[in-house]
Image (tube, rainbow, N blue to C red):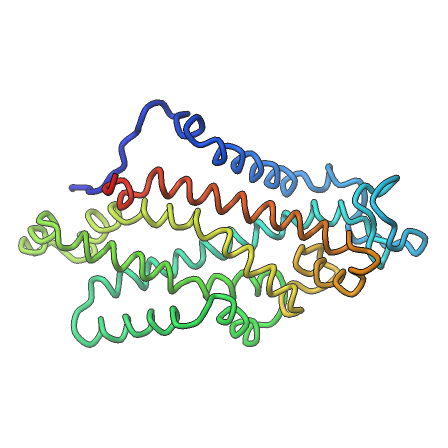
Length: 287
């Protein structure tokens, strides 16, 4: 088996952190949110669902570092628990989209004739609409909830992954070792498993890291629109939506979860771009 476009290590394994300080900072921010998600039950000072009439809309400070919302719920606790839902939905939907994109992209790249035409048209139809619009359509069919949002966002991201996979498959199958395997009457599934997949999995993994921030943003947008995660789930998009009616006199209700969402999105975007620029074979060839 031959494998093409395998990235080579440059310097030590810690070289990327020395060369890219913003990438290092972004990784630390992402690790911070991952820690919050993993240990939310121990870190959060209050129950994120506990309501208190006496503590309604208290400003940041005192017993509630980031203030409370209109139900008297502690915003810091809800933000910490909200990191769990943001990362679960983001990672789960991207993995789902990558799996579907891998299957559809490989099929489109290896097919011929009218089958290839149909599959390519399906990919083009998915790509014709933004991910948010597609996710809204899937939510209308599936319903609301964390699992439904994860499925809807994942289905909406199949198109971009399919396009990337198909492009890589077309490049790999034109290589001499793949053509030789076909001439030797080696079964198609064996060629896919031994020659095609090893050459496209790594670029697909790089794309997964890049797409996580988009998935988190789409899921938060769905909750902000009121069609994603349902109350009283501590979801950042839902918290921003609930606080927008009080923004003139209680800006912390929307501002605090908004800052958390922005920090995670920026960190994920920087980390994804850094990994892509460092390890994507297509970009490395142009250097």
